[in-house]
Amino acid sequence: MREQTPIVISSAANPEIKALRALDSKKGRSEQNAFVSEGLRHVVEAVRKGWRVRRLVLSESAGSSPLLQEAADGCRRGGGRILTVTDELMTRIARRDNAQSVIAVIEQRWAGLDAVRAEPGTTWLALEGVRDPGNLGSIIRSADAFSVAGIMLIGHTVDPYSTEAVRASMGSIVNVPLVRIDEAAYLQWYTRWSGRIVGTHLKATGRPESVTRGAPTLLLMGNEQSGLTDRIAASCTDLVRIPMREGADSLNLAAATAIMLYAIAAPADA
Ligand code: SAM
Image (tube, rainbow, N blue to C red; front, side, top):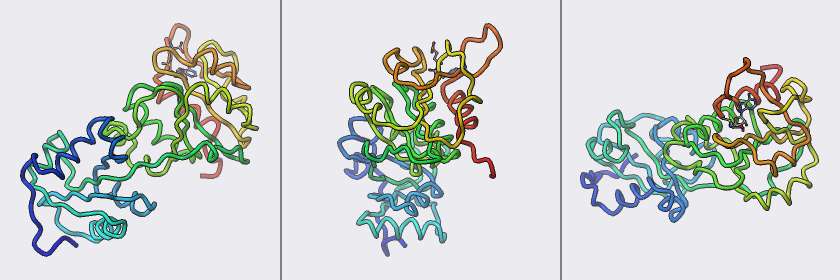
């Protein structure tokens, strides 16, 4: 699985490790068009879904197992390299004590607007200006659980490939297509979407249960601080609000998204 006599990297100054650590920043991730995924299970899931693993980084104590073999084979098949690092260096790379013993550098993927199609039974999710990586990762996780066709990120949003968002997605990042679009492009594009556009708004009077299940739907969620802008809200065919007790401020964005997806996209027969 590994090279016969693997060189164990112990120095953070090693060029491979420097390139890996550069992925901590958005600039580094976009320059390398890659992101870091931690944990053998998540790496194997990525390999199975055909994602290109450029580097598989194993700590000395990673051991061996059929899953590790599968990850290594997948990495090599895509032309990637396998590196072994000391446990101490792995902790430094992961910037936490209980670091995983396997991490991977995976090539980013972005879907084009042509992927966003209003097919029967399809739900797409659109997030306007989401700022919190933990929220975005949790939303990706919920979107995967409810078989959402993909997520459209509108305007200036946090990077879904940031380590925090990828961690919070619990591996779902490789199952949910992502599309980037700026506000002006969205405002031109939405007239071509033939399904419903359901916006969530604290001033809405509509209820989530009023949305017809099974019809092609684009669900729009707003920014954590300011909600949906008026311009984006005006693109909606329906505006709904999850009922809360009188006086409650609002729900956390990721929690509201999970409730909405349960209401409109949860499989009836699962
Ligand atoms: N002050 C903001 C406002 O007035 O819209 C609060 C934004 S809220 C924290 C962030 C997003 O979560 C909202 O744009 C909406 O998409 C969703 N959200 C939060 N509470 C909701 C509720 N009760 N019903 C529907 N969506 C909700």
